[in-house]
Amino acid sequence: MVDGIFGFIPHNIELYKLALIHKSASLVLDDGQTVNNERLEFLGDAVIESVTSDYLFIEYPDRDEGFLTQLRSKIVSRQSLNALAVGLGLDRWVISNGGAGIAQKHIFGDAFEAMIGAIYLDQGYDFVNRLLINNIYGRFLNLDELTQSETDFKSRLIEWSQKNHHRIVFRTDYDKGGTRNHPLFYATVLIDGIEVGHGFGDSKKESEQQAALSVAQSMSDEQCAVLLDHMDRLVN
Image (cartoon, rainbow, N blue to C red; front, side, top):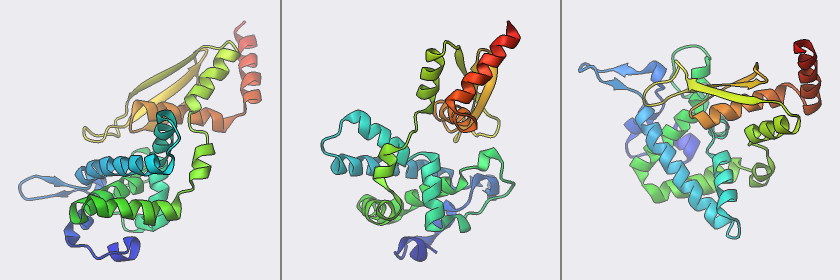
C-alpha cells in the first residue's frame, strides 16, 4: 500500500498500519492501552507545517510574512489535507468505525497527517521534505488557485455586518465529539440576535470560519440584506 501510494518501500511497516487506525476503531491492548493514529497525527501535523513553511519561503522570496502565513494556512487546513488524502487514494485504506458524523468529517486528512508522521519516523525529515514538495504538492496543489481563493469568511461577514449596521456575534464552545488530544469546537453566528450559521473545526478560529462560510454559501450579500431588512420590519 505504501509503495503504491507514496512510491517507496517502508522500513517499519507497523508504523504505517498504525497511521491508518482512526480513533473510532482504536485497539485496546491487554494492559488497557488504547492504540490509534492520534499520536502520529500530532507528529505529522508539525512536520507538514514545517515542510510547508520551508517550501513557501523558497517559492515566494519576495512575499511578506502575512502572505506566507495565509497561504500556509490554506495548504494545511483540514479541507486541503482531506483532499490530498483522497487524491492519493489513502481514503480507501483508513480503518474507522461508525457513521459519517461531523466528528469524523476529516478522518482522511487526519490519516494523511498520521502517515506523514510515520514517514518522518521511518525515513527522516529530508525524505519527507522531498516527498511532500516534489511528489504530493507538485501533483495535487495549485498555488495560483490557492493564492486567489477566499478563506477569511469571518472578516468578510463582519465587514458586511458593519457596513449594513447589523450586530454580529460568534459563540464558540467545545463540542462533545472531540477528545482531550483532538478537541473539536462548535461555533454559531448570530446577526442581530438571530442564528444564521454554524460550523465545526479543530480550533476556535477554524470553527468560526466554517460558521461564516455556511452563511456565505447559503445566500448572497443581497439575499442577506433582504432577509435582515425583513426581520427588522418584523421586530419593529
